[in-house]
Image: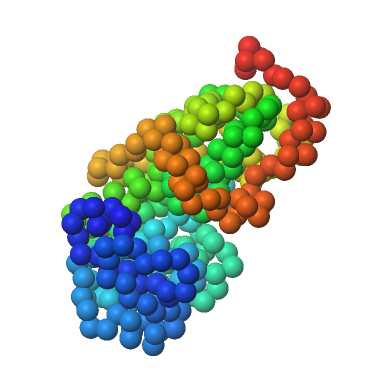
Length: 322
C-alpha cells in the first residue's frame, strides 16, 4: 500500500508501534499503539488526511476507535477485510450480497478471524458510510506474503525431485497479488469509491498446473510433478490448503473459495498482473530477504516425510487419467 501510494506522488503517513521492522522509506512515520486509545490519539494529533487505508486483522473495537477519531479529518476510509466474512460454506459464484457472519464492532475478541473482520467492516461503515471502501480479498500472494503459501511452493520446487502435485491439473484458482490490491485501493481512494467489493482475480485466471509449472520455472528447478487426484490426496491423510498451500479440491464445501464473483471490482478498474510476474518477484524477494517466519518454522506446507510416503504409496498418475 505504501509503495503504491508513494510511487504515485502522494504524501504518505504511516502509523506503527515502531517496535519491529523499519519505517517505510519516503513516508512520515508516526509511532503509536492503536490498541491504546490515548496512545493513538497522541500519535495522530490534530492532523488530517485525504484518505486512510486500514489493514488491521485484530479486534474490531480498535477499527471502530480509529474510524471514530478520524471521522472528521479523513475523506475516505479503505478497510482490508476478507472473503472469510461470508457464511460457511461460501457458495460458488458468491458476490457481495452473499450471507455473512455476525460481527460486533465493539468486540475486543480477535480469536475468530471471520467475525473480527466482519466487526471491522461494520465499524468502518457505521462511521464513514458511503465514504468507506471495504475490500474482501481471498488469497493474497506476491512479495511480502508472510503466511508463506507461495514461498513454500517455490522452496519445494527448488529442492527438486518428485513433487506431489494435487489435481486436477486444470483446477481453477483465484487469488490476488498484494500489489494489485494496493494499486486498486489507492485508485479507489483517489476516486472516493465506497462500498463492498470482492477483490481477487477472475476465477480460473490461474490453474493448478500453471501455478506449479510457473514456480518450477522461476526457481530454475527440474522437479518432476507427480499428479494426484483429490481422492488420492485425501486417502493419504494430507490436508488441503495447509499442507498443500493454495490448493483445494474442486468440489465439496470449500469449492467456493476459488470461485467468487468479482464483477463489481473489475467494473471499477481492478486488474491483475500475470502470475509469472508474481512468482518471479516473490522468488526475488525470498532471495533478498529470506523465508517468512511461518515457512522457516514449518507451520505451513507438507512435511518431506509425509510427501515421500504418499508418493511411494500411489506412484504417478498419468495425465491421460484426468
